[in-house]
Length: 162
Image 1 (tube, rainbow, N blue to C red):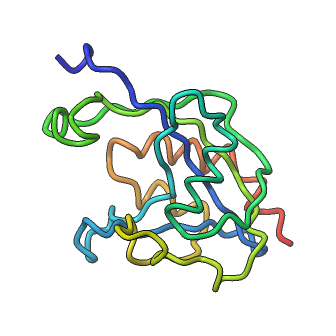
Image 2: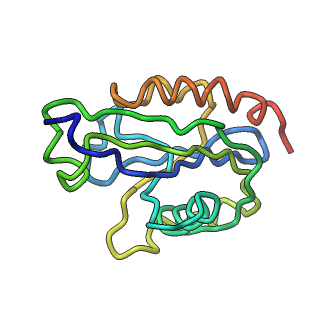
Image 3: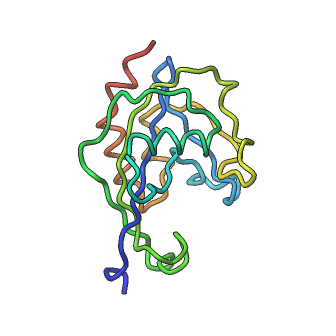
């Protein structure tokens, strides 16, 4: 059954500040003490929507700011499969996982511009700046390979401060 379901098209954002750190946010629907409750902003790609426009829209929706510029992207679409116990439950039960286009962005605003309270039903309840190398350690198991790849592919952006 799992292989019969499609992948949901999605975009992801690695938002870097002037110090070369990346924004991670804690999912509001998971327990605060859950080490894998932290993730990078990401969201669904609407039918016919350009992925570059979608990643900026998702930032505005999820973290309350569009003060960012795209500085890089992973050339490939990266897939992950949900674990069997989540298939039919997560992602509205319609998908086996997600196929994601990941972008690196430079944050052009101030920390006060990040507003998790802009949406009536916020996805995140906390955020912080983290070292890019932390990504694999915060990832839920089925997303870990993607976060490992992002830590390698976007390493140059964490070194380019300012």
